[in-house]
Length: 321
Image (cartoon, rainbow, N blue to C red):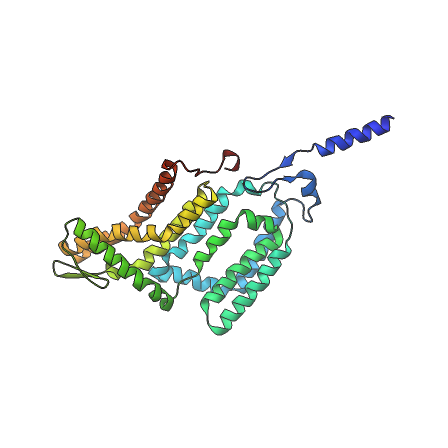
């Protein structure tokens, strides 16, 4: 009789074991986690992931070297140097999601490595750098997931996706995107100057003030600002505990916010080019470029404040923060 009572007590205690829930993820009970093929995530998994990742980087070193050199030497791709810090930041603010993280479905990482290797090989042999660089990033991500499990990929998804910003936009493709952006920016700048009473004449992407031609590409290069501000938008969307639909709105608003920042920067820059020395105008142009990052953050915060003013649910509930 006592043996049966002990068995019932043990069964009840097992069923009452606490569950471990991570913010934003489905709760995983202790019993379920113990049944996972790899158990919980441990420092050993991270050491193995780092070692395998280093091997992957060495094998695809041609891509990583080119991306680094492009970020250093090409002013249009300077945002590449910011990406490692962005990824580290996104991982840091999500570190609590890795507590008691189950290690499972590591085969997904193996598939990522395989597809990454195929893309890298194709790009390497055909000289298509975009495929090559994407393959290198996919293979690195897969090498980490193949050791730590698919739960890490799911919980750190924004950090993995941010690696896409490492891929440079090569000159031919850049010009296809930059030209219409420069024309639109010049048009909006002309309207803004007219509203402010500044006498400006536009021809294509060139603005004339006091007889001085100021090209948008010279006074405020479109692509350089657009990509950097899109990266800022992405960071803001995922460092703030926003609801999914709000994040989608922020990401969609990234391009208009970047163009707005370009116009805000270009209006005073054009005036300075027309009323001051060229050297001073160039210095003013460089300084305002950094200021636009702060302006972009303010515009994004303003979008969120407007949604709150409309009494729409914006932030995630406290239990998910």
